[in-house]
Length: 107
Length: 164
Image (cartoon, rainbow over all chains, first blue to last red):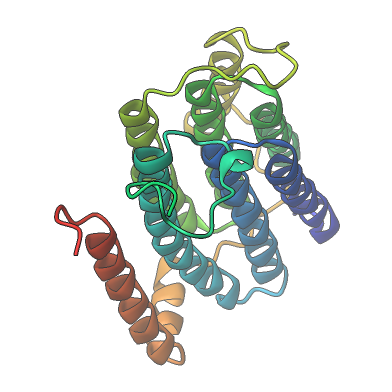
């Protein structure tokens, strides 16, 4: 039997690594990958807690977490593609426009 | 013995997730992410959640990573010059981590463990999860269906050909 604290330590490490990826990398795809790592740390927490208390709720929570991740990732990836198509960049530093006046030029 | 495999897999997960932080090529980052997700599936299995392990392999390592790889290849991303370039040895490190996972899988499958001592894993069967999912959580399942439908409509709207 794995102690609960060890699973929680691993989950916390994963979450912290995901947060570091989001904060340090400036590519949009890397930011999304860091989000995935963070979601998986949360899922490991839920599953470890569910196994500790011999309860199926942790796995149910992880299933819903997967659903939310899939929905979020589909929309985020199409937004990244639209950004690349319009601005021809994937770096988060270059996204400085709030108003879309690319096609029409400066007014 | 289970503990050894568990901690080895945890080390593989953390190493692969940490490697995403420092690689330059997006394809290599996707490789490391696949390794991390597969190792996490093995962690779920060792914790006693076989349904979630299978779902992790199918949904994360199967579907979501295909989305990532598809987008990386469509956008034709170059390696960025922004990060410290060590551990960018291409496929070798992901292959090594995957080899560790594969050896663990062989050990688990063919029963190379010395003996199943008193250490037991409390397995929560998929049947229990399903009964819980369609019993007290039925309303949340419906909400998840609506969420997926909304995401589908949003993606279709965003990826339409003709700008309105």
